[in-house]
Image 1 (cartoon, one colour):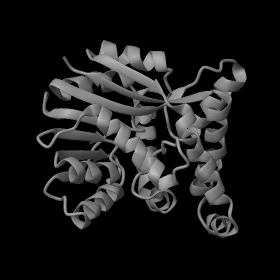
Image 2 (cartoon, rainbow, N blue to C red; image 1 turned 90 degrees about the vertical axis):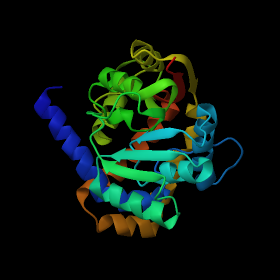
Image 3 (cartoon, rainbow, N blue to C red; image 1 turned 120 degrees about the horizontal axis):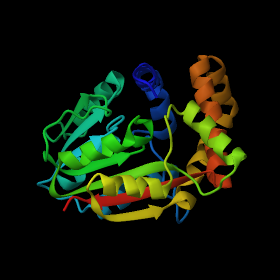
Image 4 (cartoon, rainbow, N blue to C red; image 1 turned 30 degrees about the vertical axis):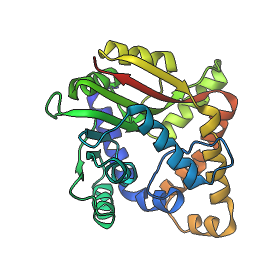
Length: 277
């Protein structure tokens, strides 16, 4: 992807989250990511379970400095600050999300611990070794040069620091139909590309990270899209969508692509942690 195309896609992602953040919050709440289902959880319980599992694997402590890349509406950052008493810097492309996240931090009484900044994650110009933990939930999919991104993440971690990643992946189903479905998802969801699990773990190793634990949790997160399709299928939601612009309707139409991708094995979902020794 050339520089002009990269800049254009980055701007499209910024506009997407500026325009649709309100819809995200209406649909998912403050945690705009997949849920983790294993025992009949509600959608909100499942979302919290995903966050709790990643936090547990990262062993976050009060004195830790946490970088949340792709912090969205501030749900994870505020929860981390409130739960562990750690300091969190959240990065997002969207000024609208920065504003919403700062409001949430104030309402939850963690403004002294959680701060937010508008920044392109393709250019992590932050001081080296300035964070003990890096938290990335469903953001790296939007990154152009993923190897450079993870190398930057390794640079930002202090020795002994850990990276936690929840990520959409290319699944094990091969062939033209599966590849075509992944391309459709990437186009609809503004992702330059998706990696396989093997490609993702290799990238982390090449960035200088070790102690990698990579779990495929596709089965546990798949109900996310079944839930979303059900939400937007009721008559009131359909009436609302009819009055909105084509971008929102196109985005909602892509829910079925995501569900199909997971169901047919064209896509997968990973929870991965890694250590800077």
